[in-house]
Every structure is written in C-alpha cells, then in structure tokens.
Image (spheres, rainbow, N blue to C red):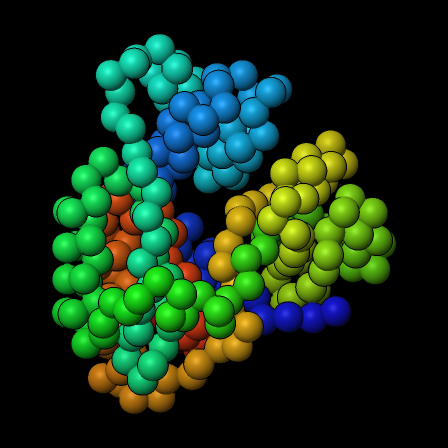
Length: 250
C-alpha cells in the first residue's frame, strides 16, 4: 500500500520558529479545554482528552502546561466556552480549502476567515461545497528516523491494532483509521511502543491539485499563512499538492 504523504510538509512546519510552536500550543490548549468541558477531567474516562494529551506530547508540550490546561478547564466555571465551526471555500484555480475553528466569537472568526480567503483571491463557499472531495480519517504519522521497523511487519501491527490502511512513504509510515476507531488504534499502537509524530482526525483529499502558476502559488500561500496566524483556526485542510514547494524551501 502506498499513498501521498504530507509528512514533508508536517516536518517542515515543525521546524518553524517559536511563534509557530506557540500557535500549536494554543490550538492544542483549546482542544484540551473543549475535551474537559465535554467529558470531564479524567483522561481514563475521556477518550477525546486522551487523544488531545497524546497530540500535546507529540508536539513536545510540557506536562505541567497540559496539567494546568486540564485543571483550568475543569475548575473554572467562568472559563471561556469555545464553539466549533467549519468554513469551506475555494483558493486559486478552484483549489479546495476546509477551515476548522474553535472560537468564543463566531462573528470575529467568520470575518477573519473571509478576509484570509479574499486577500488570497479565493472565496468562502456554502457548507458542503468542497468537503465531499475529502475523506474524514484518523491519521497517524510515524517518523522513520524515530522508529525503525520492517514495513511489512509494521503494517500487520497497524492492521491488527484496527487500522484501515497503511502507507510506507519515503520518510514516514502513514496509518489511516475510521474516525470512530481512531482512539482505539492510537492507544493500541502507543501500548506497542510506537512513537507518533502526528496523530489526529483529519480531512484527507481524495485527489490533489497541482498549481504551476507562480501567482496562484503565492495567493494560496497567502490564504494559508493568514489562516495559520489566526488563533481561532484549529486546522486547515486543502487539496493543493504543495510537496514540490516544500522541497524547494528545504
């Protein structure tokens, strides 16, 4: 089994500056807060919180920061309540973009997202206008530098853990799961001692679009950069094949 991995892009992003790391911590902090509000502060009884903690650890968030976030969400009745909202739209040349947010002010978030699309020559569409081009999947990325394994044996381990699919990429293994089984698969692999560079439920494009026009590439990068800078934005998914651009950068 083989597939198109975005791991080069993930790795490239992980090596960015402290400001980017701060953004990642903000995103995960909100996920922890929402998980605690929905299912309580005990990870043993809250799979969503367990997943958020695992994501925090994969991104090197300090344990005391994680614990503080859990205690704050559990103990402060007046702490901020975040609502989830999703925006869909088009970038240059019909590229599809999905933006997932957690916000305490939907009006502000909607305005910021529209602004990002507009500045990059794109536009926000109606709900469902591009999501049909993506599949929701649990995705676990394992860095080959962190975990040496025989691909065939590791594939059997992943499938035995409940995974749907396994891709052996150049610098990583990619494991895909049904979203409903993601927590179970992640925990099974964790028990098996598998270190995870990324573990999350994501919207994965069914097909990728290549942009050759420099103007289009600049415009979609503008949209993605503006969205990336917005603290309300939790995740951005798109079907632009940006792998060649990442290779040029590195």
